[in-house]
Image (tube, rainbow, N blue to C red; front, side):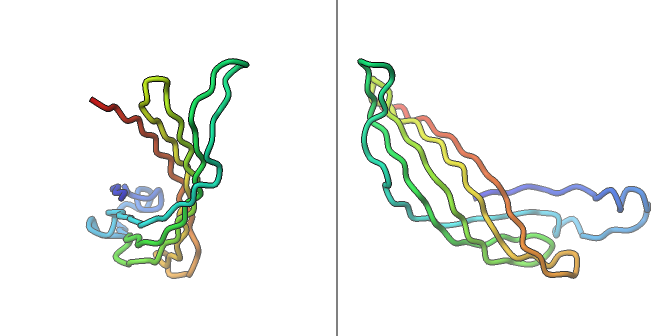
Amino acid sequence: MATADAGRTSYEDLSGSVDLLTDSERRFTAYDLSVGWNLLPGEAFLGGTRAMPSALYLTLGAGSTRFGGDDFFTVAVGAVTACWSPTGSPCTSMPAISSSAATCSGTDKTTQNLQFSFGLTAFF
């Protein structure tokens, strides 16, 4: 899930009194539910003597994006790389792109949002 608050556009700032969106319409909210497939389970070799367990997952998901007072169907595609340190703690990175159809400006257009997430897990 992602949320953000959009500010005023340069057009709104330059014109002075024009508001294209209300404050509630400037709130961006997006979520998706994804499933993944473990494409490359195995090990990553560092040098000639060290190997670490690793994996590469491909993900595909669907969800919703709300902005400008409208809700849009969203498709998310990504990849997850995971590796485990010698202590057994996994770390992950996930670049993904979300695509949705938007009509905020009165014309239909497709938007893409690039996202990155990183994770580190500690067991105790």
